[in-house]
Length: 98
Image (cartoon, rainbow, N blue to C red; front, side):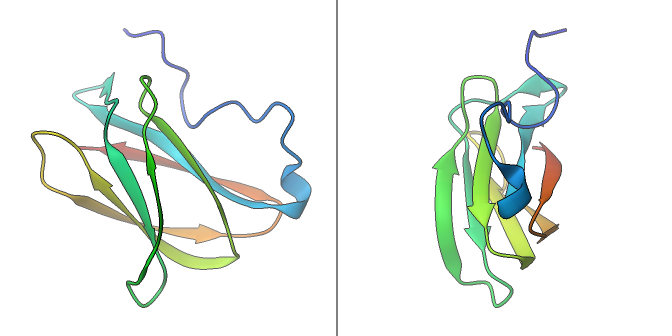
C-alpha cells in the first residue's frame, strides 16, 4: 500500500467553519494518480476552476455552497464526473477512481 493519506490534503491551519471545502483523492487501482486535473463545474455545467492533483493524488477547492460537478481528467483514462454538495462549515470528501 502507498503512503498517501486517505482523502484530501491536511486541513491543518484551514478555518473550515467559514468555508465550503471540496477535496479528495484520485486513484487508479488503489494507487494515487498525480498529474491529473480536477475541474469544478457549477450546476449548469459551466467551468469554474481547475486544479492539478498532487503527487499523492490529492486536490482541494474552496467553493460556494451548492451543487457542483467534479470532472477528473487523468492520463490514460476517460473523464470521470462526480456530483458533490458543498456547504459552509463542511468538508466534502470525494474519492475518485479512474
